[in-house]
Structures are given as structure tokens and as C-alpha cells.
Length: 206
Image 1 (tube, rainbow, N blue to C red):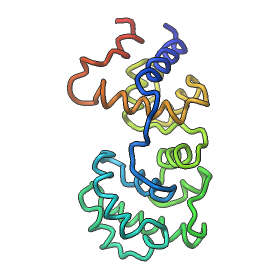
Image 2: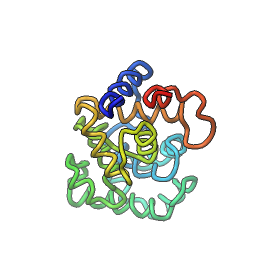
Image 3: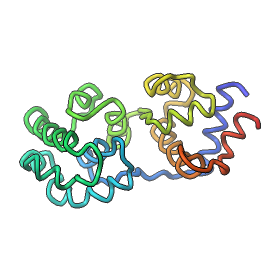
């Protein structure tokens, strides 16, 4: 199989497995999605979904979050990693959204990536899932599977993102990145048994 054929096989099989893909992080609007994605760094979506209800009860808008004390935000998110930095980022991010963007989450990569705690991957998730712009957020799981399927020789997520965008049609980006994440969790976890990982066997021909 050529790289393009492997990508077509991956796309076809993922569409069979996951015709519908819910967004894994619970949210109700662009701001709550932005917060949830920023909190998800180096922790699981499941853990983020466990702590955000209490956080959003107190502060589900930039205005409310900006008014909370750093210590209060830290207490509300203390069960996830990097708590101090994430609490500081949430407060600063919210203050900037209020002061510079009238409390509205901006719809450009450049403006999003200027916010504290918002890197390219977080901006890509918000642009694709909140606003519907074509984007291909690549996390460590997608990077691993793309290498496993021999769809990239990328040394980092930025290089893998470029390869993914070349191989998959733009119209599929917003969905396929989620499908790959779901596949990895169910069939090819980073740790543990990969016996069910039929897609890797299929694209590598073994």
C-alpha cells in the first residue's frame, strides 16, 4: 500500500466504526470549550469532565472567571495536574478576553494563540469544534497512531499535522482527528494490550 492508500483505508474504516463522533469534552459554548481544552493538557478528558461542572457553576463566562481569585480557581481544579499554572492561565486568559475581545472568544488562530495557556493544538480544537473551521488538532495519541500507520515520519506533532493535512481531505479534518482519538482509546491504547488493533495490521499488511 502507498501512503495515500493507507490513509484512504484508515478513513474508510474509521467512518465505519465512528459515523458520529461526539466532542469528548463537555461544554456549552466556545468559552467553556476553550477552558476545558486548556485544562486537558497532560490529563484525561474524563478527569476534565469531572471537575468542570463545579468550575462552570462558578464561572462559565470570561467576566465571571476574571473576577475569581487565583486561589479559588486553583481550588476548583486541584484534582488535575499543573494546577498552579492552569489556574494562572485561566484567570489571565479571561482577563484578556474581557479587556481585548469584549468577552468573546476570537475566531482566528493568531488571536487564540496569543492567550495564556493556549497553544496551537488548543486553538485548533476550538477553531474546528466551536467554530467549524477546517483544522487538524494533533495530540500525542494522533501523532503515535499516524506513525504506527506509517502515514508520517514526523518528529513532532507539528510535522505530523502537516502530513495529516496533505493525506486527508480538508472536508474530513474536523471529524477524522476525533475518530483517530476514539480508535486509539478503544483499539490501540498507548499502554496495555493492542490485540484488537486491526487497523494497524490492515494498513501494514500483516
